[in-house]
Amino acid sequence: MKQPLGTIRKTKPLVHHITNWVTIYDCANMTRAFGALPVMAHAPEEAADMTAIASALVLNIGTLTRELVDAMIISGSAANEKGIPVVLDAVGVGATRFRDEMAAKILDSVHVDVIKGNYSEIAKLAGENARTRGVEATAIDADPGKLAADLAVSRSCIVVMTGREDIISDGRRTFVVRNGHESMGSIVGTGCMAASVIASFAAVNADLCDAAKDALCYFGAAGELAAEKSAGPGTFKMHLYDEVFNLSDEKAQSMMNVEEL
Image (cartoon, rainbow, N blue to C red; front, top):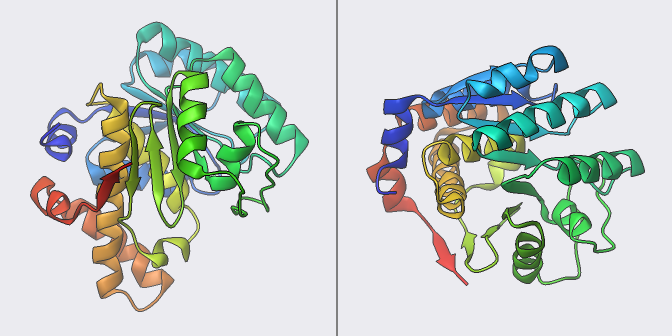
């Protein structure tokens, strides 16, 4: 898609989130800064109805409970029926058995279109002996590009691995995105925000691999621009919102640093 950001801002897709309580405010603001409309409806009683009027769904297990997982499965099923993309942010998979079991339950109950996580979270979902320290990634032994591609094939989805270099694969095409800045790791929530950005782009682009690639390039480019003006984490976060809000397709595309493997 030539003008994904322009399309988001013109069509204003509604992105339904069942997400992390720690970062919910940031995810809502980042979705809005990109031009989409965020809604955060967690109650099982309204989950399906809210998804029915949305253009994409984000499921983030950062602060999961059994009731929250039930709502996620209800929403995911409604999204599958409607044919809108489901993005699962596998926050903390590999840290506890409960988290691993709930992630598996979601994946077995709902067709997830985009699975996102850091390197160790994705490695754990792919069956590797990986551990996550809280929500922080640890080193993995497997080749990340192959791991992402293999998981994408086995789950018939797009796999997104976020880190110093982001990897996106649909099993046939695998991309490495090198946009971004280390300051993005100095504040809590940029990983969760990235899932919201991916969902916003997926809402307007049926090529979900391309949508995820563009989303991370654009988000990373905004991070680079924000870092140039920032004195620390507080000002970086402020400038990140502003740079996203003022970003254009032309500016982001001139900065895209992506390679197909």
